[in-house]
Length: 90
Image (cartoon, rainbow, N blue to C red; front, side, top):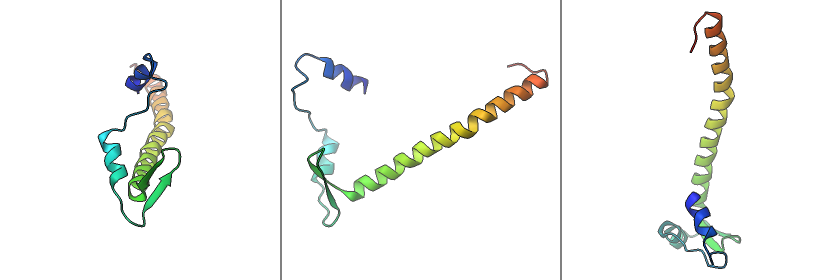
């Protein structure tokens, strides 16, 4: 992300067309009949068999981070208070 931000700040980069990576070209070149979806914002046709698993994996990762923070932070506070009550210091 930092690389893209620095690259976009370079002179003349505002009007330059974006280059597709090798993996993006490969994903767009795979044509599985009956599973293709056209994305207007990308102007590309991509198989649903790529988008659904990626969306599912992203959701799983986001949920584990949220649950970890939701449960982990109060647990750390509880441990810190117990350690303080017991006379321990960290």
